Length: 445
Ligand code: PMP
Image (tube, rainbow, N blue to C red; front, side, top):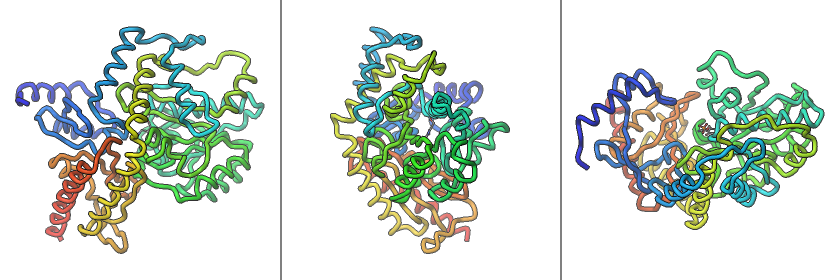
């Protein structure tokens, strides 16, 4: 591609002046300009205005599951837009893509989950889940059941309920007023959950919410029995169990939904991201048939919760086509197999570099810890992972650094279409990038 220096400068200037970026260092944007301005995507690759090419080892925001540049999805959107782009789904109005997608979701979701409420993304899905479970308890004659319990390293989004449920402190501290009735327990201790329920009284608690694999918190994988114990505790105390599958849904972990690894079924499941691979904003929550039936039986009026875009015809048409691609191309199985390759690659990095500590992964969600001491896992005084991310980008891999809670962690979630050669290329670039920072570190000793 011919590089147009004037165009690039114009875009950088306009970006600084007018575009407030989500979850971005606002000062750095002014000082350095937008980090990368993308123009095209194809498969696992992204291209920017300079004509440089990058492996999108994060599927952008853990969401472009089927990879970039899928013409089928463009066509599905165009066909639907040309027919009927949008209609209201309030007042029981409906459309075929929303009907068919909700039916498809009932077919692929864990057993018993059968009815979907649509949103435009993960934060809206979480806020919807919290409101609907509270509404459910009102209808069930237990209005005191309203507290929502989540976990300390959790991320559930940035809407008011979602931020209040999020455990990661920096997101909570960003604002000075959060929603009431949100409580947090230690990450993987089912005993801590039990103790909190007993301390607060189960008659005050509506639901417990958890990500099957914590994503933004640094790809933390629950111990094998954790969710079984959580499910039992929720049953014992009549508390609804919500899984936030916004990242882990639609094949990311090598199963359709992350919770399937643990052999339990939630009462409510939040989803977004991979449902449309990011081609259009889409999300939702799936309710168990039992909750759905109770809502129908006990409701006396209108369900007073709804977004303009709940059941958006074009977004749902894209969602349907996206799921068809996932199934036709066996992408869930590919995520499982390539996930193993990625983990093997991480282990190779660990064996050949001095600053790679623990590595972990489930399907195509993975993490590498950066440490000063591979034996004790002691960390550096200031985290190195952000420097490695910069080195990796220079060489053509986009990944992410997590430094919350004194972590120094690189996280990865490549598109589910990735192949062995692309994983090997990713590992080779990571090796060079980590080695560069390791050597710099040695020099400063
Ligand atoms: N829940 C989880 C587990 C997430 O990872 C995210 C986004 N990273 C959200 C909710 C929020 O989704 P969105 O950004 O689409 O609002």
